[in-house]
Length: 333
Image (cartoon, rainbow, N blue to C red; front, side):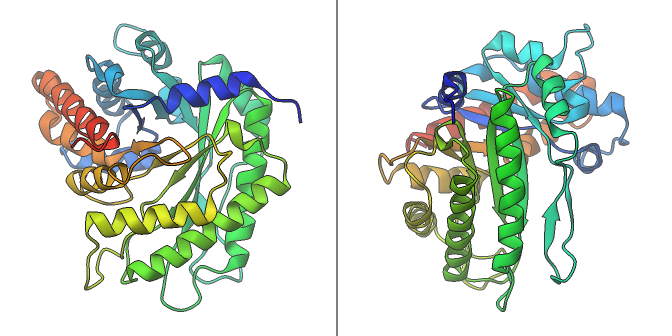
């Protein structure tokens, strides 16, 4: 397969040391849940106001390399009429786009799902490229129970979908982020989480290689490895770091451009502590940083409160969380 050096340049920019990615890619429905936290109705104007706070905050480019957007936000503008993607590009932040269309029930596999969105993906990528997107994200959902879930079959079909998405993205000149999210909610142990995450990543990368995806132009977005949120023994940052890096060394080829973490339902503070503990383990074969959503946005929402007069306070809250996670990604938090 012909190598695309532009992909490598974009991936390197996204993985710049001390910077991370803001995942502001909630669907319009999920954005409504965010707005409900500040008692605002889920209307386009309110979604636009919140995203404008995120994208126009001063100095975030010191700590953010990229921002993942949703279809409605990459096509949206500031109140001054400047496209959001142009606002980010002017800051030196790479615009990205979520392209999967959500998960649906996987028939015959109770409690498991498969992600949709391959139809017309090449045409959608062409449009998003014209709008400024240079990387993309596709999420698969992996739920754990203590019996047979997840099955290898569900991991395999989702991995094939991810591989096809990655092929189409790279052909369009767009760096694919593949996100196999192992769900934190549940009563599973740290050991069970490590086993499932390792197996998931092994099947995923085997599939990516089989389908000739260029791993040097691809980024893994991974869960941290930790016990379920209602498990009796919650995982310390040091345990998270050891289990997570063990998993990566067992599963992720060194050719992969890099790894970014999702926060996966952890509190902002816990996400940062765990990221810091992982970074303190020293240099790894891949650059490793963060790609948080709620862990960055929740403090912004609290500071904003849905009130225009609090916009500057909300921007300051975003800058504070971005800086804290930047320092954590260097092991200096």
